[in-house]
Length: 390
Image (cartoon, rainbow, N blue to C red):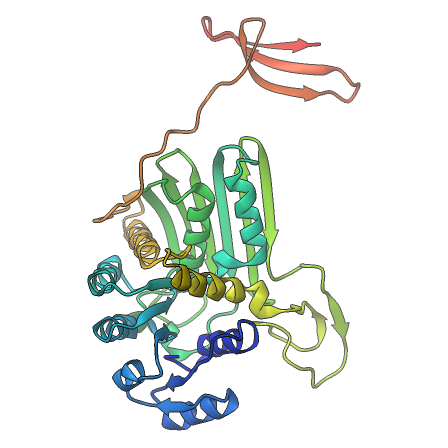
């Protein structure tokens, strides 16, 4: 386990308490005191402050990277050199160029390389994806993902040089990959329109961002991210298709609400800002945030010799979209997504038109308040639109 911050904690607790066939044997931190305290708390045999020593340790067969973004590439290079399987937290890198180098290094070494994008593995998301993949929503026309909270826990996140950006790198990477799963990973992202601003914090990076992503099928992806949202962590997704709609709320208003006027309350949930007043606790946080199913997929993929749902290549595509977002925010125009390596197939554009009635195309059918059935029809020859009440 490389890193003892919040993500290293979540990962370790998940592995030890949920998928108990696996154990963290070596933990790395830049701080000797923190490494030893973390090891003692989680019954980890070895605590080290040398990155390569942790990776090369004989008890390490899989390297889990939970480090600041600017250290990901070095860790991947070392793990690949020592022939260890690699699981890297999101975002994969700070830029697409950096992500591509990491992808190439891992593939050249022939090691397993999984992208730890937990919010793609939430129980609600996995069930929703099954519905979309079974075509219960028809063709997906629009997918929206929102993540907003009061800001990250560690200092390095706020430094654009170390992180590679602000809220878009931190939160937008989740949203982009969620959108890609819903519109289909074979569906090539073509261009991006993005707005960013730094509204509240005295930092160089953006603390708010909104973007539209246009895909080859014609589908639109939309994300909204913020480090200035007050009231906890807002995680929501929406998907619209030609035959259906999905709404997902992962963290707030999920059915567990409590009020307390007392003081001294315990931990409520990640990014919760208070322990009194109206609270929105999360029953099983590591499960609801996708960590359990994520690690299950990764280790089962290793055992079976298959690719996991989220790979280093997916992380590279996400970084390429993020790069386009920043170019668009600067130019205030649509910017192309620059993918040096596109591995998806082509997809057809969402089909227009539909069934016919009396030789005309049915645009819409509905039941009126008085029970009558109304059709809106188009005459393809004349271009005329007419109402027909059956």
